[in-house]
Image (cartoon, rainbow, N blue to C red; front, side):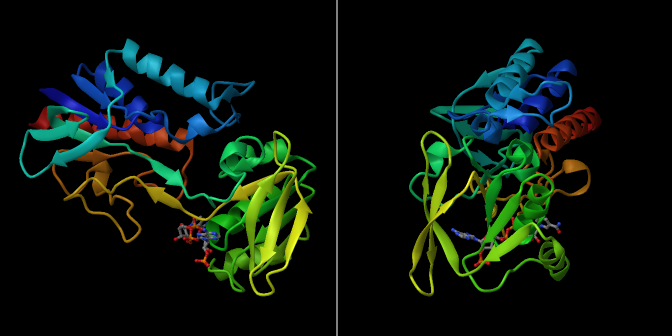
Length: 302
Ligand code: NAP
């Protein structure tokens, strides 16, 4: 019987584990076969405090994992399958095994939605990115594309315009779905131009991004556009599908009640699986710490 099972081993899950183990709670982390979260797909991380020269995303995650293991977390690289939250203690199935726990922290994160076009996946971290806040600084005085028509795309275009020479905002329709205020800011920025009714159909380049094939979906014209970076901001997919009985919003983000509790007593949530707004490694880690402290309080009252 574990005091707490943490599902997910990105910044939020591993930070939660560091806190729960240091509070002497018997902790199991179900990391899954591809543990580490979105930072495993990035190169240099320059905005995580404590690393003045930056740190590689996978190295940062290795360090977090090592720290969680050192403080006593048991970490299993097996995939979470299902949970019975209808009675306590909770029963969790992962891999071929069954585990029981008094409490659970869901920290399964979210995955960036990608275009899924040829040449994109292999250039993630080599000119293709899903986070301007994280990677804009690598595109100082370069020409970049941002794809999407929602608030994220507008926000990221503005972040990029602070450093890049030019920003092309590529959207598949003739209208943006972003809020008026965000659209206005983008329109007023002289570095940003919009390319409507258009889709990237291929990302090209030796080793890193050098150009894209851009198709106008009204005329079917395809052009080769030289470019240094492609930022994809077409939404995220929260990893919440397997949690039956846990309340989510219409897009699948888990709905936290006060203090990181879900609608099920004893089940807490932390990180990008509930946070649609900030989505940073440091905020996810902060949520992990907070959820772990709430678990401690909750177990103490039991
Ligand atoms: P979103 O609102 O769902 O917008 C996604 C955009 O990506 C849409 O314009 C969509 O096109 C496009 N898209 C989806 N799949 C695509 C594909 N395969 N190829 C090309 N384009 C594709 O997502 P979001 O912008 O990440 O925002 C999520 C939520 O967070 C929203 O509620 C938003 O308001 C909120 N948010 C708010 C702020 C802020 O207020 N500052 C900042 C960020 C996010 P279509 O329009 O054609 O469907």
